[in-house]
Amino acid sequence: MRILLAEDDQVLADGLCRSLRGSGYAVDHVGNGSDADSALALHEYDLLILDLGLPRMAGLEVLKRLRARSSGLPVLILTAADSVEQRVRGLDLGADDFMAKPFALTELEARVRALVRRSMGASTSQLRCGSLVYDQVGRMAWLNEQPLELSAREVGLLEILLQRAGRLVSKEQIVSHLCEWGEEVSHNAIEVYMHRLRKKLETGGNVRIATVRGLGYCLERPADVNASA
Image 1 (cartoon, one colour):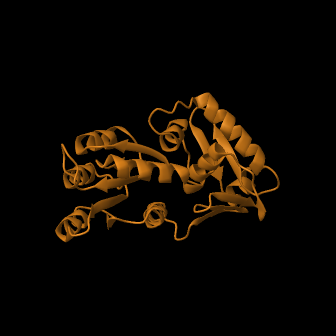
Image 2: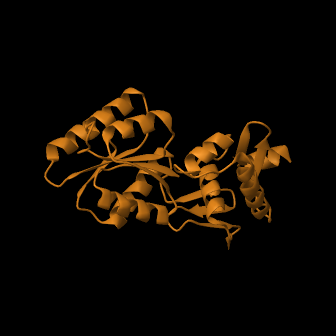
Image 3: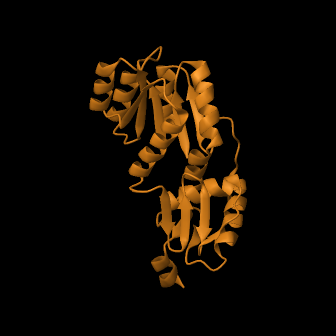
């Protein structure tokens, strides 16, 4: 899952990046509104954390331009504690949630998870597909009620596939949502990670990862598995 953090306070940004990366998110950071607008136009994200007091382009203008492009990207705005008017304007322009500074990192992460869940149409932190269960908070997976031993990359891949279960996911989409700026992950590496994950899901569960040659991968639901068997 990939997040864009637009925050000009470097100390706060460093703390947020460390915390979010420690929770398994890929995080790109920009320190001004112009760079945020460019990143949003060029890259695919799962969430935007947007400070409204950005230099070079105000956060509200970044949000306005994002929504003008018909983007439904979830947006969590960060504001000063006394800026009620800015919070109201942000929500009216299409922000999904806000937090007033200072805030607790644990609350911010909980709001991040809630926003991503809602954007994916999920009502709880657990994602299910047949006998496969994944907890987005603890980043743990179970197959037939038995814990799966997964690497960090495999967890990231599984989360991307589960959030789009039954739909085709291209290698480009996987790289886009799995990696932040500066990370080099080739399509061959994705194939290796996917092969390892597929083998671990083939231990008696009723889900499988189908490969559509030249197009990508699909986590098949139980009905699809039975139909193609």
